[in-house]
Image 1 (spheres, rainbow, N blue to C red):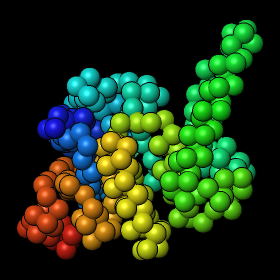
Image 2: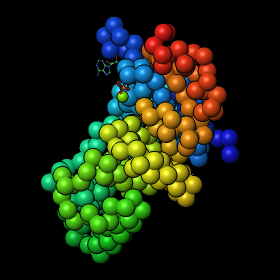
Image 3: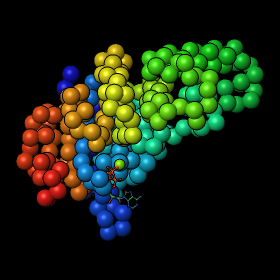
Length: 254
Ligand SMILES: Nc1ncnc2c1ncn2[C@@H]1O[C@H](COP(=O)(O)OP(=O)(O)OP(=O)(O)O)[C@@H](O)[C@H]1O
Ligand SMILES: [Mg+2]
């Protein structure tokens, strides 16, 4: 059970003279729900961008299920089961909620002739995916909205739709960047209760950037703290928030 699913080894990413990620090494255990906290600009999103192939690191390595993945394209990493939910939900406003989910999934019948001959398979695939999408929307409490344009969703519901998009590919790990930003406190807690279910019932490992520390620490197994591109602390939530360096960073005196 101690197997790491994701490992970062000495990652560095520079933007000109700025070192956004400065030698990050960390390991996420399979089946855990882990938080990543740190002040604005500490490098959290940049780290996620490296882990999911959006940026190639200047140096360092990333392993997912023991396979080296740095240098792979984002879609290749996605198909290996490491999926990302974005800080700003990437939702097509005029499409229905259900269609927003369905377009995330690759269709096997993409070549004309094979599609003609394999029409039956293709229809089955469409049907299965649609049922899966409806199940996910129901799990997240969005089933009532499945045929309305996504533009009509509240901010909180859009966050849930972004989570649904991550779930539809049946990943083994999801990275979530501020999944409760701008969401009211009650829904924010509900979202974390859903994360617990995702972890337990779907056996998905979660790595979550969160600014609401008091909310995060009630739900996660472990927390990593970033400051100026480095991991300055990691461990059990209660230990981390009482760590002297972490307190200094958050009080602004480091
Ligand atoms: N594409 C980019 N080009 C230049 N600088 C960038 C780029 N992306 C991020 N940075 C800089 O890198 C540093 C880390 O940014 P990053 O977005 O990773 O921080 P963050 O911890 O996610 O912050 P926040 O909590 O505000 O989302 C910041 O100084 C930011 O301005
Ligand atoms: Mg960020």
